Image (spheres, rainbow, N blue to C red):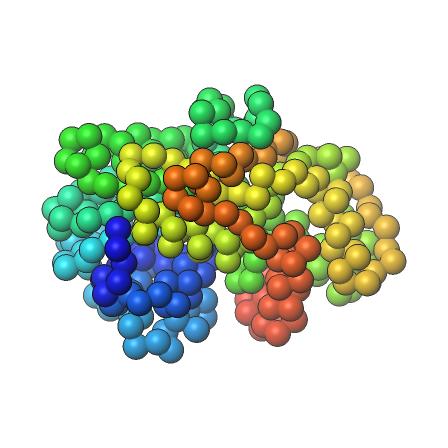
Amino acid sequence: MEIKGKRLLLIGGAGLIGSHTVDELLKEDIGELIIYDNFCRGSEENLEIGLKDPRCKIFKAGGDILQTDILDAAMKDIDGVFHFAALWLLQCYEYPRSAFEVNVKGTFNVLEACVKNRVQRLVFSSSASVYGDAVEEPMTEEHPYNNTNFYGATKIADEHMCRAFYHRYKLPYVGLRYMNVYGPRQDYKGAYIAVIMKILDRLDQGLAPIVYGDGSQAYDFIYVGDCAQANVCAMKAETTDSFYNVGMGVRTTIKELAELLLELTGSNLEIQYEPAGMTFVKNRIGCPKKAKMEIGFEAHVTLREGLKSLIEWRKSHMEAVEKRRRKA
Ligand SMILES: NC(=O)c1ccc[n+]([C@@H]2O[C@H](COP(=O)([O-])OP(=O)(O)OC[C@H]3O[C@@H](n4cnc5c(N)ncnc54)[C@H](O)[C@@H]3O)[C@@H](O)[C@H]2O)c1
């Protein structure tokens, strides 16, 4: 879709990926950006840069996807919708009914409102969690739905709802399956990436970084700024009814991640290994080829560069980091 002059709604736009997408979209010639968020996890702080631009506003009447009349009002005269709002993995584990309410029913509400208001395009945030543990590597978009947890189950249901809405009502959409997203503004709640903030906290105190298990668990870490670009590419693209991996396609073990953090912070400490806790997935690396070919997205920020940016942000936002630590 041509985004020049368009009015775009970012549902869950005050969160990690949403707020970076706001920053990325404001580099484009868009008409207006409206943030629709209930702020259960996101914050106005995340929108500090975005809200300085007069084209970016928070929808004032409300921001919950379960409040369908308010959601409907926010969609009036909107051309394109990004849907980021969801409960995260461990919250879904603890509260499966809420996971169903917000992630499945909430997404159904978003789809219904898009159709009612003749929205031209939807970019839906799915997740690599739909794949579960890899049965082949790297995982293409054809990899089976090997998920076993509630969070992944809600994302699989949502993907099928998007598809059904497209086939029944012709609502054009694409879904993005992000791998492990990290970067400035992240908190302590990511099931796999929280290890980064926890290690940095320990290093500040002169304590050895802790790795649970033998550190051989391997993931595809992707910088949040790259995810924001993937969203812009997905909104601009013409393809529809399709899902895309958003990752680097690079395998990094938790041990390698911890070693890189030690190197980047100039620490001589040694990794301390502790018995493994709860892990949902031990191995997940996505194939980035389809996204490159069909929506023109390619990740550019290496883990080394991305971690440097995160470390810089953390140093200059210690108050925000402290708030996140308390909330964890
Ligand atoms: N961060 C990752 O590693 C990752 C990986 C795969 C998929 N995803 C998915 O990408 C999307 C964005 O992730 P994120 O990391 O930015 O998460 P986030 O929690 O930072 O952002 C989600 C936003 O949605 C808002 N929200 C939650 N419930 C809401 C509701 N009922 N109504 C309105 N707003 C609500 C929160 O306040 C938050 O601002 C999510 O759908 C997530 O499941 C994230």
